[in-house]
Image 1 (tube, one colour):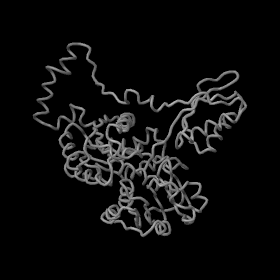
Image 2: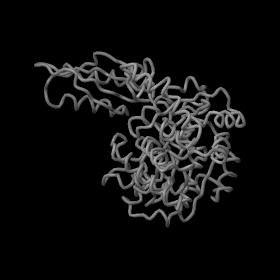
Image 3: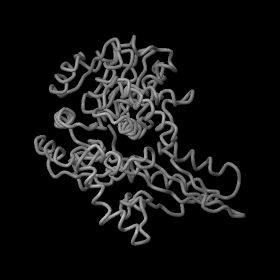
Image 4: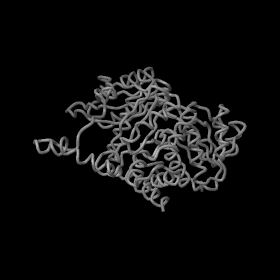
Length: 439
């Protein structure tokens, strides 16, 4: 669903006159660069120096952007190009740290030997006490085999470790959960399932991450059936939660009822199938999909959806179109029906640019830049752990999507991912749904 962006920081000096940075922003935008963070490094009498984060497709596009900025003249100049991404990863992004300080022998005796033996005996008599006297209930294993790392594909678990560390950072910051990366050197479903079963007692939940299709389906289904703790494949259900929230938000802005709509899913990989299942669980009028893979089509049929004969049929018969193919420009403007809602979620190369879809008559259109899984998984697991539930259900996932929707400001597709209130709202909604389902 996502491809690897080319992200660099440009150190740009502009004369201290109003309007000069606007010229820089225009030059970047004209070449389809995406400006991220802007930090003012120095404000001088004659000039201002800013650190500008720019995302583009590749080094060639970046070179053109730098050339265009330098060509503006009037003293505007790119002084340096840096890569803060690599610097941010030096030494890793996570660190295991104790919650209790040991400053005396008395502390040592309580935290470790001999005092810890008493705690062990308590848990031996009643294993449920481990929920209170250890960190198990607040720890999630982030498990990957490295076969579907971002848009890079099967690059292996070690190369995917920066992603797992990133998940752990987000778990900690947004939900107060300890996320522990687990890198597996096997993709065999039997071996993956057995390995996770052998280690699961040290965790309160299992987050499956960047595990490729189709073996991801079997692995998740078997672990959910065989473990007594929450298991979720984020590339499936985390994506689907945020996609449902985005679709509901788009419907609200376009004056459309999702429950009365025919939804067309273009691309039935892990994300696409999960989105389809989420839409059906929510209760859309009809869910139809298309994919070049026959097994993917069969899975959609097994889950209760229908298949279309062609892309043209999907576009001609769907009120809402969601695309997760990664194929840039797949949807042509002439395919768009007036009044359609189109979410082309592949990032950074959307199946159709929102502007083109709107010009062709779409009632609402967006791409995948804002549809970020971080809006879902921290709060989903926080709520599941708080409720002490053994599984994550569709009722809980739909509750999470509705919480994201309720947290979205008027005019926005989804909330800002750094808003802590969103994650708390998701956690509260998931915990409530889990408790209701247990009654």
